[in-house]
Length: 443
Image (cartoon, rainbow, N blue to C red; front, top):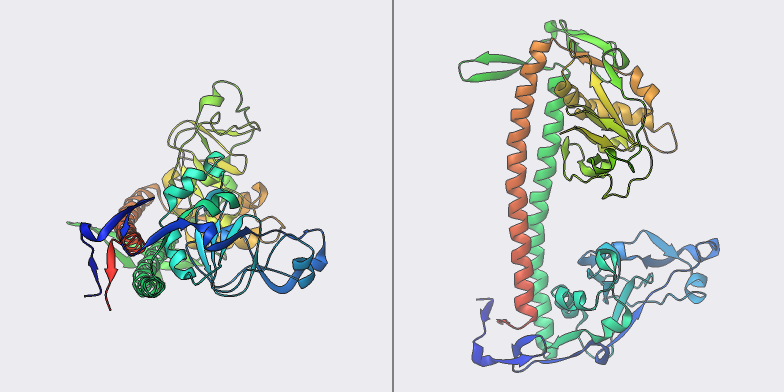
């Protein structure tokens, strides 16, 4: 047995709940030098690109910190408010979305003013503190000011109550949690990799279908998917398409799809109370909306496009993210997006969605957009693209096949995500039970 649950008679009341009788509690300031970092002037090149690591709060992600994105020079360290933080120190993010996140440094480093360091004054085990602070969201929230993007300060950090087991027990708990969390993290990583593989498989399947490499054959049970033979294919004359079925056509984008012009003022009725869809409301590569907000609630003040229900909305910026969806109702969309309508006699709206989601199309659009400083697809370039067009009857059949596959893969992904959440909860629960003394680690 690696651990046991302590009985109630073995515990005493502490500042933050019961702790083992052999433990103490105190404010962090009595056991740690607590301080924040700083940022050398970004207008001084001589302060940057040296060999001293410099972390920001975004790199504090409840894990060991093993690398950084920026470095400063020795002069930058000496002539700024930042300080050198020793290896094996626990750090805490102080502001913004990462406020309350913890990290454990694997090297000597400096940090910006949004990162707080806890350097032991005595023999306190920094790794034990790392795990302990992971479970102190309530303490941190108590001191936090400024709403969702607010934060805490160094004085708050000094006042945080910490548990103080005996030195040898701190080490035992830290080593135990290293071992256990490593196992949890390994399982979680494998499941996250499986999700990536499923998403890649879906993108590949969409490309195979919309370029005609696979055909659908109806049967008594529904349909079968069969790879087309070489004799059934012809050269499309389009780089991103390659070969397509002989009975398919290739059409210029602008000949069968209209990209809306003209913008409306989102500050006036009826537009201010309409849903406004922006790139951040769409899940990358999935064609699905993840949030709906009105123009008014987003504080929209510049021109937006009006979209009818059923229009395709495609993000022109950072096309590698492939953010596209079908408008669920009459709404607005960001000026960074294109609302599109198809010629219904030639192209089904839903089928256009699948074309835009295909990996082949995205790769070609990205190649074109990379020719400009800010990756985006301009209206003129998009209008020149050529796309494959089966008959409407076949489009409708392919829509059914693609929706079925999409639903099945999404169902699998949802199940795996639920498993990941349960694993994360179990890991967090074990950490909490260990650092609060609810369990005793056995030899």
